[in-house]
Amino acid sequence: MLSTRLKNTAIVALMALAAATATAQPAKAKLVLPAVSILFAPVYIAEDAGYFKSAGVEVELSQLAGPAALNALIGGSSDFTTIAGLIQLRAAQRGQKTLAIAGLQENATTEIVLSTATAERLSTAKTPIDRTRVLKGLTLAVDAANGLPHAYLRYVARQAGLDADRDIRLVFIAPPGMGAALQNKEVDGFVFSSPFTLDAVRRGAALWISGPRRDFPDVNPTTYNVLVARDGFCTSAPDICKNMLSALNKSLALIANEPQKALALLTKRFDKMDPELLKQAFESFRRNTPARVMPMGKAFDHTVDVMFGPQDDKVALKAIAKTIHTDEFVRSAKQVD
Image (cartoon, rainbow, N blue to C red; front, side, top):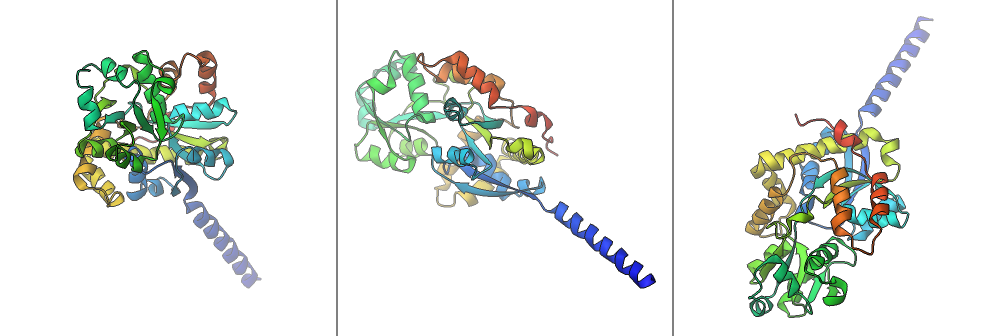
């Protein structure tokens, strides 16, 4: 009898230990990024510094170029991505719902660079409006139709009375190929962000229009980069969503308060990039990055106001925006220790 009791006690103890061990295992989540970019530094740092794991989430990080990252959420093969709210809104217009749970950057850092020869020819244009007006008739590269650089170009063109899709010849080139296309005189310029624009300038191109320089400050605040979850994921796994933001808060705090440590982590991630170029790109990014994840209501409204054109139903878009973002997890995410 005693032996049976001991056996039963041992079995119960083992079961409890197994349950405790299982509970201690970090939850798993898949996060897909649309490109390799300094813009995603908070994610890289959270992964490489172990912030995701210390928050109780084991993140499987991958990359799918451009719109394919959001499509992975829509198709259910990934749990998170970080993209522009503008792109998320466009998908929602087509009935493809996702949920933005935090703002990671509200300042537009897109830039337009021109070849030296083109810039010299247009050198009498001094103000941002004049510099935009003389883009008429040029050939500019963007990464994808209806992507963020394309939308930014449309925005600045409207400020100068232009229609970017009619008055500017657009070609679509992946970011790594933009600099070569500029050097080979295949395009007059391109629209993207650092480090690609910064690298082109170092090679002799002219920085023509700059978000970081605040050439068109009225574009801000915008949903430039938001953390987006697949539809229904944060309902079924709210702790994962909350803990993801706690980890990202640590990353953002490190970038803001200990930039040298943050840059050291990124140097390992961007080991093929020229160190000085990485440093300059990181400094530009850091100046435009919040110290913690941000609520998005105001930024979504302003995104609709300025980044969509007169042909868009902005009342309907703002109604859609209210259904595809929540600030619940920003409020509940742990403060940085």
